[in-house]
Length: 305
Image 1 (cartoon, rainbow, N blue to C red):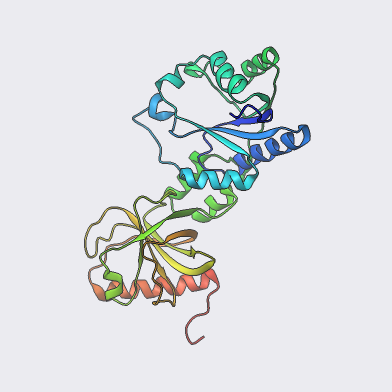
Image 2 (image 1 turned 60 degrees about the vertical axis):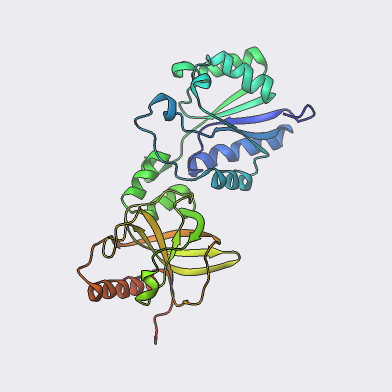
């Protein structure tokens, strides 16, 4: 940290979704920082703690690092300390973590954490431990209550489960925004173009968790433009098995050149499960049916309507 950097209000966590619960924590962080003249800081992780603590069960992130940084910036955070959760970090005692990161590193004056926060080797540190260390080192601690939506505590695990069910609409309610995938459009097999429905293939290096293999109504954003879009997640078994990806067909536009451009795909609603078709005729019939439904969902006029 620069020697002249202000004292800080700090919150700590994975922030792997920036959902409504995270947003509540961030809102209180910004309020405390504004009220007490502190710099609002997020201490997060570049690798999931399970990478060290439970390597057989490392969940895929809901959002990528660039998405996380953008959303934290939009929330008003002034700086992010992104720590690699490795063996060395995992071995720190609660007091060693507080001394190294909060006191010496970030000059914390106020620390806000989520409900049930644990830290230090083996999760030995609790919120009460943090308060005791705060009294010793001169910072205050606040535990922020979880956010409950429709009877469920908002969590990354719950949102991931909804996306795995294809329920992108409910996931959006817990996220406080539509779920998105962001990345570069790359060249594919161009089968869609051959049958009259060109698709933009998102790079497999894209950020943003892919929901259940299915067809979705959505929007494609490129630059300042937004286009009504049919989104297909999965592998194209009708023609040739390929690695799992998301393809986008922009409705009513066959003239767009999206190759090598960064686009955002926004999932609005589930349309149908992925399926293998027995031929071109049945595939085209399904695609036309999908687009009819998607127009209706997105409020796009039907042809000749």
